[in-house]
Image (cartoon, rainbow, N blue to C red; front, side, top):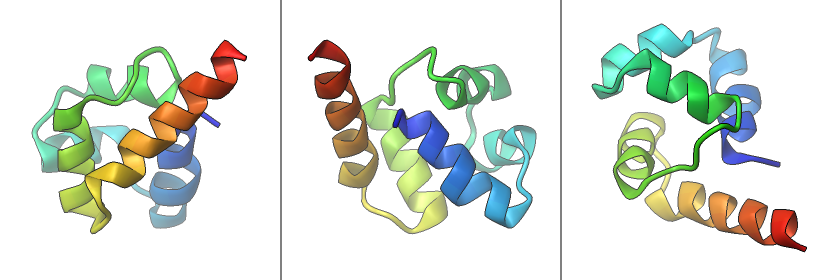
Length: 75
C-alpha cells in the first residue's frame, strides 16, 4: 500500500480531516499532498518530518512505508 493511501485511510478519514486543512497545518501546498495521497509522488524526508510532527509518529514510519511500497512495486 502506498503511504499516501495510509495517510488517507488511517489518518485523514478517521479524523474527517481534509487535504486542504492538513496542508495549511503543516505548511505545504495542498496539490503536493493530493499528489502524495493519490500515489503520484513519493514521501520526501521533509514531508515525512512534517507528517510525523502533526500526527505524532516517527519520520521512519512514513519513509519505511515508502521503501516497502517501492520494493513491492519493483518485484
